[in-house]
Length: 237
Image 1: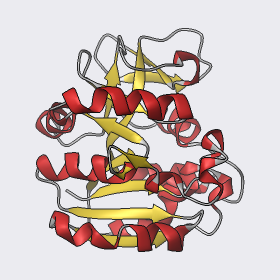
Image 2: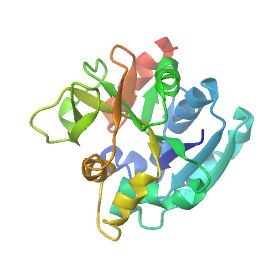
Image 3: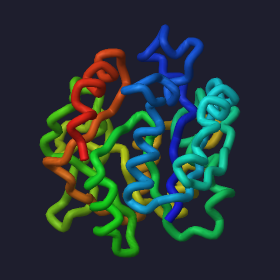
Image 4: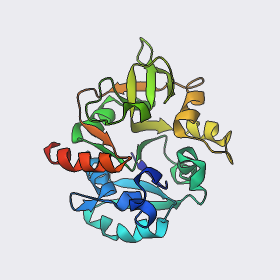
């Protein structure tokens, strides 16, 4: 299964660090932030990647020229309209997935201990999945997290940052199918987040929650998050 990594955003909450250094290349324990994510996928057996770039995209590609050392195959996709949001970044990868029924998806600024990626692959049973955490231990700002409401059968019934009733937090790791692209195209040309498109998509598709509560993960959005990751990353499997 291929993994799509969304790495096109501006990273404004990490400015001024990201004014000249794109967020995926920010140093974390001596390596670019995104390489920690990619290494986790490789340890889980994933070796084919589609990386969507936008802001300072050429800098990202040059900065990751050594990715071949990880033993992976990378296809680079450019999102020229990255200011429209991460849903459009995913849409830019559609043509690279025409032969794939399902694909992994992650944001480039998320970090997972190894067992989280292993679990979503193990739980996959020919239907879309979203990794969720009912009690996130490492998030510094729960208010900025995307929340999900889960029904008794284990499927997502609502998703978004501002939903009033929720059960868990979206961890930013998915197994999806191409039917989501149809929904994203409805918002083409307009700013749209992935969670907003998924909110519409789950009205016509089934998105099952993959519960990874108790496992360590991080969403690196701010300078404080980056410092936090420096402190705890060493202890992860």
